[in-house]
Image (cartoon, rainbow, N blue to C red):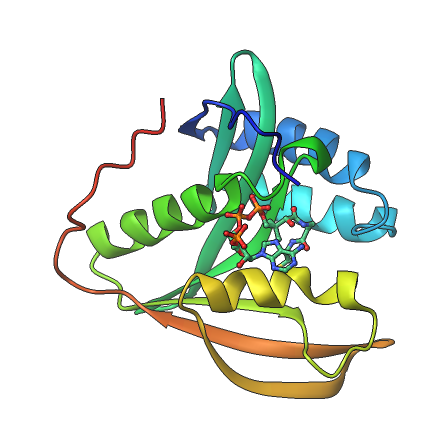
Length: 173
Ligand SMILES: CC(C)(COP(=O)(O)OP(=O)(O)OC[C@H]1O[C@@H](n2cnc3c(N)ncnc32)[C@H](O)[C@@H]1OP(=O)(O)O)[C@@H](O)C(=O)NCCC(=O)NCCS
């Protein structure tokens, strides 16, 4: 939960090498949410390609969040991973990261941001925080696939991206 004094933070885009480094550090620190090292390896490899776009959240010198997306089709990007340091969650950092990827998607002329999350039929409340987060950020829940992921229901969510520029600034300092 966010501390009573909300941290100041800034969202910045990073190159593929930095993306891999920051994602590995962050996802490894969230071992309850990312318990499988091969999955972290896979995410880092994908974030390290030229096609991927990674943004991080910095509070002072500390990296407190990261998200990356890759092209899914001509008009859709997939936000593959979004993660926020456990001590900085519920402070709006995840929403700011997602909005930045939405804005980059909009500027590239694409129409949708897609994401997957553990689906709502999962009974462990903590496991569906990603799903709740995406819904709160106006992603539409399309369908849950019970067997796509081993041991977890997989929800598909889409967010239509307006072609109009946003009215608010994305500077969070
Ligand atoms: C999901 C995650 C990225 C959210 O980041 P965050 O910075 O805490 O999110 P925000 O502060 O922007 O939250 C925005 C809203 O999302 C919802 N939300 C976020 N975390 C939630 C939680 N644990 N339980 C229920 N709703 C939650 C709330 O509606 C929240 O608004 P509120 O705080 O005013 O109630 C973060 O919890 C995380 O890193 N989790 C581990 C990794 C993960 O699950 N990634 C998602 C896979 S798709």
